[in-house]
Length: 312
Image (cartoon, rainbow, N blue to C red; front, side):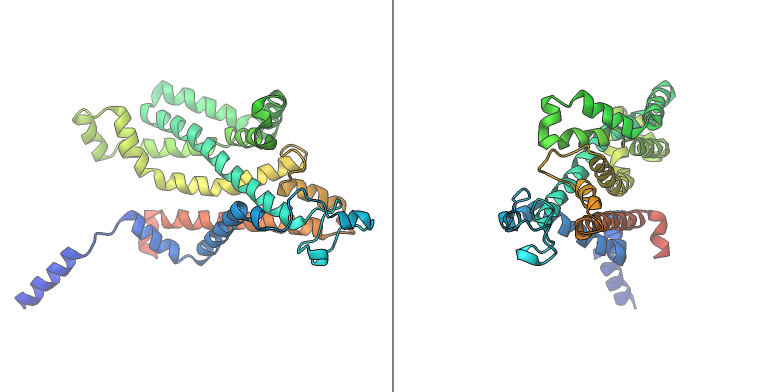
């Protein structure tokens, strides 16, 4: 019996300790909708990166045969165009792929802007408290109360004829403007995490031995708050994509001939009765992208929530 007990103790000692990230990955893999969403997100990223290089047509290339024959937009599958063409004879699939690149770029630029603004403001407010917290949270409340669409329109008007307004075919300004009005939620989240974590024992111990505030925040508090931040950023991507599509729908966004999914829908709704494919395919692309990021974000939220460990 003593030999068996010793062997069992040795096996337990050799077993690698469970970690938060390993447990989170195991829970995430059990969520079928999250995995399905993650797979489509990966496909969407690959489509945005390599899609425009493997299509037989450019996003601005016109099928001269359609123009010469005075035919309208090609239906899906006609003339080598899998999704058909628009009213100018441009391949719709190629334009949707270029729109995917725009959507993935807005997802990246907006969330980077949100992190760069929201995380520092939330961390400073939560750590210092008092007047600093009151000042930063009032700024946050003002930003939240100001109409997002109006603020974005004002920025686009102010910087319209500058290098910033012309960067990335006019898209960089729109992406940064969306990020500037979207950081409020992350700032409040980080502030709440700081308020709860700074009262823990290891923070009190770090203070007692004289660790500077900057190191406590960057090396102890923020790493422990990274899970909720990842979830917030992932769930914020669908809103950023939808905001860009809405702006493109009202004419604010990429300079022609580039087109985002929103501007494709704008063009498609004009011909909805006679050429429904011009509206249908971009709408499906937006819907699938929003659902995929939402499923993935929900899965990450459930996986990174330690309270759910005992329920799964």
